[in-house]
Image 1 (tube, rainbow, N blue to C red):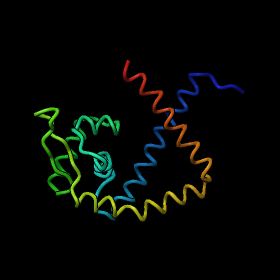
Image 2 (cartoon, one colour):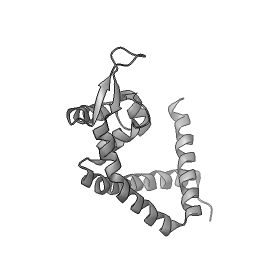
Image 3 (cartoon, rainbow, N blue to C red):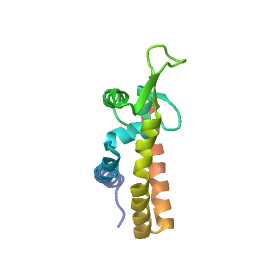
Length: 148
């Protein structure tokens, strides 16, 4: 039986919504022992490689700029991140992770590794790789519509 294009799109969306909820629940469990929330982890993760403006974090994470701003302000207040001058834009400061922020993220590592191993055991490394590649392709295909 062949599914219609509309059914495929709807199933992909509904499954993605469910996956988002599942990942957020797991992320909360993983982040809690490190003293942070999943949302804090998400923002810290976005700036681990390089400092970004709030709008850049929002684009990277697919969340609103206002949400990122609230979280960034909390992270700065807690000493997990800091604001730095942005040479490209005088008013839009960069959010940068601090050493305390790196410590918090590193604290998630052992449980994160266990969860990754459990999921790999469940799916197998080849199938898990195919799923990740398919999700990445789907996200890239949807990015085309945002730029139109």
